[in-house]
Image (cartoon, rainbow, N blue to C red; front, side):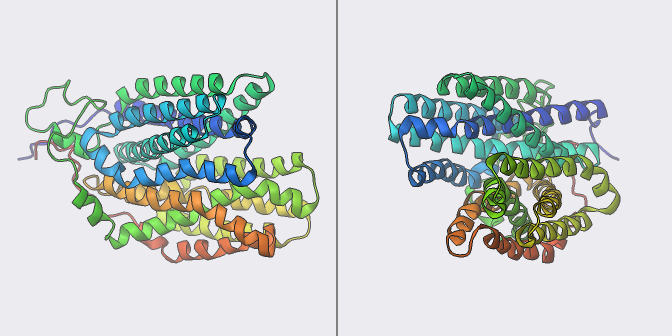
Length: 424
């Protein structure tokens, strides 16, 4: 006789989906807010281009150091508390960094960016984990729409940043205000989160409704350990899914960093046309993420990964090789659409088994963000020798690898979800 507890009503899952979407949006706003004021940081510190590169790498290192631990943390305190805690750390880190810029304390700026990077990295992994949980509750593909929300947030954050800079708003005042608002939104939204498998398991055995609240559910003894974390790095499927995400993250990161510059230098245009080139990429990627959910449900995860990989490959080659600007911009659009689904589908694949989702998402996120942060810089070094456009052709290698291993993302057989069957 089944002892399943009643499942949560679909309306709750829908509310959770909107809450996760909002958290993705404000994460994008926060990231773009900082990025939009980097010129003010450079001017405030009087740094050269090389010094700025090293400074910005500090935040990336913070994220990469923290990401491998994100699964262990989320499994112990739940995705909701993890989002709140590390959104707060991100806000504090960027507050320290911006105040230190005003006070001309470069070392303190680095400390703030390192802490901010740690906060952003674990916050990102936790919201992806929660997005996968909601996707499973709804029974349909929605992860790409969450990532589209992040893209929309970056556009909004960049626009607000441009207005703030034009109005002469102070760097600390602008950044800290946005980060505090972001944190308030996250605190409000996690109340509607669905519990992750580990948090739900921790409330099994007579938990009260208050104890089982999605935002406060805590794993009291079943959280993953460091040994579990290390063991996950030896799972072949998880590492192959990580390669799929690596390819997508690298193509996206390279476009963010280099498309506008390549348009300007490669075609002899001005900065405004370069900005249009980047806007074409971002719009194509966002639209493909919004439209991709129905295609995934219809054709399947692996098929869409292969279609997107092929599109990214074609788009990069066209952009790098054709001599005509408008055709190159068509290539950018195809590239953006091709880069759209790899990261969200990788997060979904890593979360197929709810019992190990937190650890696997942390591994896949670490692999993906390593490529996102480090890859574009390596392309820059290569460009010094072969030029920007030819350097982008190196992206064909990881994209081809992603195509070859896309089958690893095939959905696993359904596993029992403790959030649904706490009494079994």
